[in-house]
View (tube, one colour):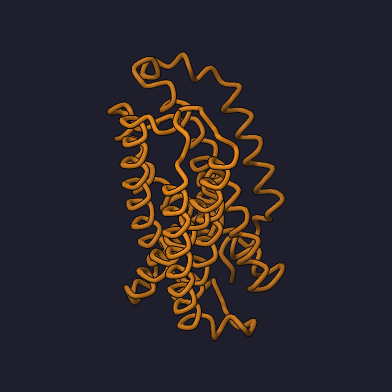
Length: 276
């Protein structure tokens, strides 16, 4: 018997969209604790309520309706740490390399002069970013994308389409980092298929976000101190960044190739089962 067999994707999306509308119509800004929060943090909290908590509550409700518990997604806890390291390392290097290559070409040839904003410039911003990235996002997103959506898409379109479409939607949700998110969406889906559990993909998601948060806070802090966004990128710096980006893309591609070689033999056949 499938998990959430009576929750269709169309119904799920309609319920979630209705929840979005309700959340944005409610006068949540008037809540007493909101006035003590940084404005950008509050907008992030409100976005997370819509993108994470509402879809999660819908899934939990249908699990309860089917007389199942959320722990059904976490039953098999045995996995190889090598898969987590390969997926995270490959996705971070390849995604970051491609992003740097595209962004610095855009900056160099268009001479942008706008300063870079810093979401990490307040204590509550740092704390909430850590909580969201390390705990909230991995837990909610893995259940939503690799727990529910991947299963439903697998039944409807098969393994390859399910992986590709769910990863694309996952990338759209992280539009600012679409390339990396699309890549990890594919790799985490393969891990989910292989181990029949969200435990390894959730741990990989946590590790990935810890590294990303660290890199973001460091580079945004450097940009704030140096104010490099208002200066023309030198040709030597441009060449150096292009070279580093190409090396990152190459190493990331190799790591992902090793990961796929280890884990995709079964994906060539429609034999994967996600549900118990």
